[in-house]
Length: 408
Image (cartoon, rainbow, N blue to C red):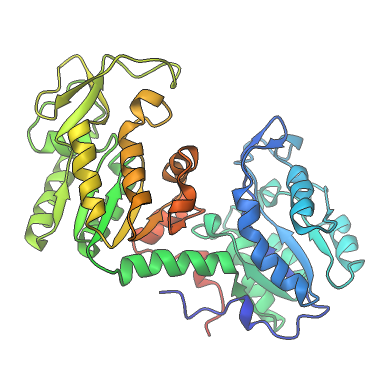
């Protein structure tokens, strides 16, 4: 899937060519300081490859949601500083909120081979996210000869800097390709789902069934065992006729859960649900507060308690399923992992994945945060850099950022 797309390795004679690279520099910031630079590091192989061949490299990315227009808090200035450290060369940051204005044009015109320019946050332009982003797409394309999409975390959005720009690059005879990070994501996620070494175990957690409807449906057809944890497990338990106390419930999705359980049975797939649950009187406030919990069977959740993590027997059941797998894909925590007491289920799954020699893929988002927090990241085959994008991939959707690249 998607591997028939041209990549950076297909770009020839780069010396002196202006290459626009859409990166994912949407890093977490606290008081202007980057707290996790994983995404910056993930962009380096593509950038270094282009620089080594004498290209003029123009980088762009969004940061944050940018609800109230351009502001210093969501400027890419801190990214420019960290990136220069990692590349070991200066990064010329164009701070202009217009992103592609005169300042950007001037900076690009003055570039020498092997120079790096970073444009301002693409979402400072409202047209980045709207359907009428033609003008902004064209302005981005005017700065460059070729375009590289290496922002997997944004590749599920048909934004100006992700997909819109490609048509204007093509119009002037330039190439549109995917970067090394995109290639790696497509290879791991694509192969895992389309061509897995079996047994293939998929683990889905997180809060709501609604967020994972299509993923559950698609993965049931591809995997051998589907494991359900997190808040969405309680809607499945309710669909089995169990009482779930004050636990989270997607009332309108009970019938859907019944359908999925029937589908699993019909296809001969294992669908594992919690056999016991860690319950408390209420949700912790603040989220990491000390909390009193007890573990009860899943069919004996007290009416005045709510389930906040899988129980110990379930953790063992899930870990055993992981140990027998040859391919494991995991998206979504097993419980309220931000709380030390309620992180046990998520930790048990993460440990089982760290200890297996199967291909282990973490589908971004909270699962990636959990694995990083637990210090197990380097034990996984692949950790996706995009939560939403990897979910859409697991749903079997075509990502606009991939689709827009030139075919081989």
